[in-house]
Image (cartoon, rainbow, N blue to C red):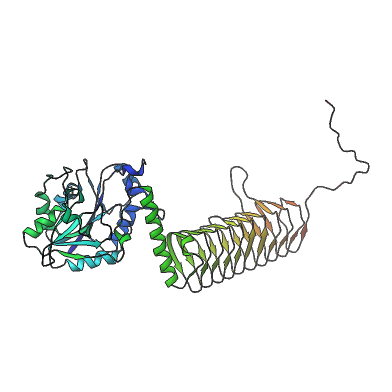
Length: 455
């Protein structure tokens, strides 16, 4: 059957104490609701309906996805009322999975299991057993173990409160049956709301066999109503990623002090030290070592490269056998060819450092093209910006740039050319030439230092 996914995302999230809708608060730098959408898409549904309410414009702006069906819940009158906003779109020949925009860690495999379990019936529930079920709706079963209903804690009697199997809210229903049950919902309860859970009792009264499955871990179905719970979800997500990486052969020096905020692809024998943050799309090839306190964003790190401590790398490509840092910054467009080295307090932007070339200390390379086996001395800068336009510096193979030099672009330094330390280079240098461009030194005998004037 076709699959429709309905995601409930209309809550304000008052306990977050934020101007953002609750579902836009992030786990691993991604809105919680985006995690849910991504999970849903893994199942190839023919439609995804997002039920929104508070902060709808902010939500639409943040989740810019033309494939979604947007359904507004103008008044928040309960979960049943939320799903009713989709009633007109429900089809008889589809299964409908109901998910929650503030429950970001649900695995596609768990939802697939529920779909399989409920494939031959009109209703399936995702339930779990808790040592402390306080706050959750209780799953009520008859003597034969069949589900007969769900009772919310506010409406439960003492016997029902002793039940430790609870409702996660996640369910799968046939489109025609769900539409029928939604139309029969009542708000005759302690909260005066339309509970989606009431459809379970309706199904049982029709002798529908209600299927149930369980998630592999409770964090899959936990939501976030405040910052404390959000932080707990963040750590659960990071633990999940860390465990996956370690099973793929990555050495994490301390899995509790590692953060992945995107997608990471790894080779063999990768070592990641503490307080490393990986963001966006990151690829670490075989033998990469990343030292502490490093941030890498949207970058590819080649085989047997070492990223030394406290480096920051963004939108860069680093090839085989390179060294970067410590305290290096590679900005967007930085490329290191095989065996290149960038040392402490070196910054690169939109520049290529050729094979075997080195910029070891206190250097800025902006809009530069450096050839093979060149050496860039400490304190060298490419003066690439005139206040309006940016220009390019080209440094040939084997060139040697003396310390504390300024290369005023546009300028070309030839192959095996040498720039004397302290030079300001404004004109091209031919191959194998030496260029020295600095003020003439004068040594003045008998120089008297200025004295402080008397008051």
